[in-house]
Length: 373
View 1 (cartoon, rainbow, N blue to C red):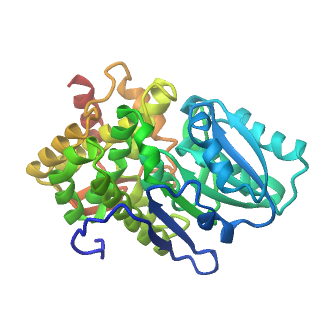
View 2 (view 1 turned 120 degrees about the vertical axis):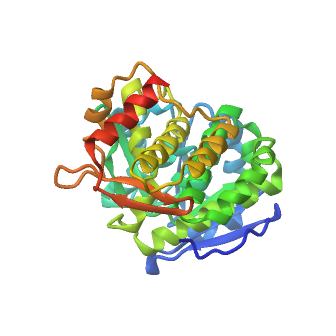
């Protein structure tokens, strides 16, 4: 269970949280207008050179503001195509090409400006280039601000499975400027809420209760509600990452709904479904399987499904993804151990567990019924 206690609504001013990893600890800055504030960056830049990694959607909106705040440094940039379908080794190589063409040394710092795809690829490039260089996360989507920018998971997709090629490489800092959410499409905002709901389901029931009350405000982009949700989500993730950086135990709980969701993403073609949309369905399916196992009350399933729907997310998977394909894709999930599929399921709202104690027939029934719906 989370140790965070009751919800205290945050203001919109600058907040700082810390991910406690000893010598590799780093801050998460949350607030309006941080993107061009040099004070957020200066202590965490390794040398005098920066390589900004962004994409074709985000760069026109925010690259100039970022560069203005970092004008004291020598800046290069690489702009990637936008979309999950480009989260692959071929696109990753464009970052290495840029680093090598500019003759960047180990003292260059990568700055990832964008959503989860940009952050994951820029972080993976930083993990690999000359065996490891510094990087800073500047997430511009809700999903990236509450989840993917924190914790040091980096990587790319493979046609056989999502995020199957990657490394753990922690950023020097995370700078979450909430003002960037003003340009986020409604569909992307909803996708980010899936990861927010996940934290309440895993270990933070007071947060889940708060979300039920404040989901309309979040979808309306109420600044105080968004700042509170981002801070509480980051606190939850920082607590788990500090306890289990390399996902040997507790951190696997952060994958609630993801085994189902990743199967949807890979099975439909990356980018057809947004990650958060697939996770929203996955949260509901994990709850349905938990009910079938006799672990979760049906009333809790109803609350979960209702909240996911109110976030503007789908609760049913694509009907044209056959059940046998689901099982093929889930068999290459990163939580498979010794050939056994392990899933994150629920004993209650705020009480998740990782288990391999799953009757195959009940998993099959959960998938089949979801498809029929």
